[in-house]
Image 1 (cartoon, rainbow, N blue to C red):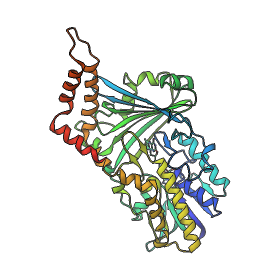
Image 2 (cartoon, rainbow, N blue to C red):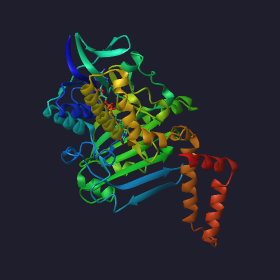
Image 3 (cartoon, rainbow, N blue to C red):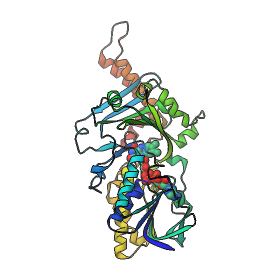
Image 4 (cartoon, helix red, strand yellow):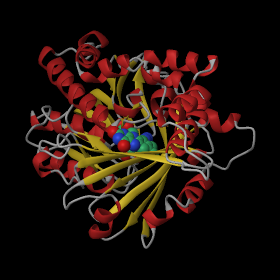
Length: 429
Ligand SMILES: Cc1cc2nc3c(=O)[nH]c(=O)nc-3n(C[C@H](O)[C@H](O)[C@H](O)COP(=O)(O)OP(=O)(O)OC[C@H]3O[C@@H](n4cnc5c(N)ncnc54)[C@H](O)[C@@H]3O)c2cc1C
């Protein structure tokens, strides 16, 4: 059978990052991607945190097809009646080097695949890997259709469901309680309209998150990210929360309902939908990260459960790129030693533990359990909005002191045993 140094299953950001690192060092690397092109099947909300990964491939990012740097943050808390939007504009976010950018994967991943090819790596698209080839517990290559290809190391970067890896017994099968489902549209709008609607200057971007009735109180939220001449808008909802919901909800209807909300409609008005996608998201946190390496293989990106929903920040792309980078470094070092056994590849997990990837997931280890609390998506967004509504209300009679309004509101909404216990539990996140 034909044999190369490294085969990579999946041409998303994790796979391409590994391939770029390997090809840059002259290793023979093949990426096999089932989509028509890299980026065709890849879904993200839309914001890549560049700060954590800027130094990994410093030569790359200056020419990357990013959309807009995120210079303005919006969070909207939606209750049944009033809703509250917090808008944060900060000099720090608006000054280069920017900490994060909005991205469109169809552009970013294709560009990344081109960079891999320029370095001499091979990205084969429209091909699905059907099976990992095993000799005992060792992964020795892959089968794609009629073709078997051998490799010293196989990097499994097949994305969130990890079907090949779980079929080969290298990780657990995906479970609903560890995943959310995302629905997303890309809606074209003129740049000037985008800038007006989110208070931006040219070459500035916004991230706008929504919590509360937007998911009918289920764990999850809505998002809008501004691109150059489009917006990415979507809804994410926990699979388990959906299953446990008292009334059956067809999750895909949430996105249409979101767009029809009076708060959202004017933001989307006049736009043309040019892309629709749906995708799972790993939300199990570090407790659900599988064994990351073994004889002849490494797991990277979503296939390794490396993503983090911390409510106000959603991350996965930076973890995917970083894990690909460390996977490549590991294979390069293993090759120098001629040892592709589990022991020879153990450096991968050590590198991830030393890096922000497993450190951040460890720091956020309590978040997945904490955000299971449905009141975060029902009581709290409503309570904040109701309290502020009182503060801004002038009724027909004489007004009471502002401090009394606030104290009464806080007492009513937050000073009860249940809420205080929940707020106390949140100290761990
Ligand atoms: C709705 C939504 C919103 C998100 N928002 C954000 C965000 O704002 N910021 C952020 O950082 N992260 C976000 N994420 C997470 C982020 O998108 C992922 O963590 C990231 O895409 C993981 O990259 P990856 O390369 O590991 O996986 P993927 O991008 O899924 O790539 C896996 C690739 O493997 C290919 N593949 C799978 N099986 C096979 C096979 N058998 N043979 C060949 N090819 C195969 C697939 O076609 C795919 O191209 C979001 C995710 C979703 C779904």
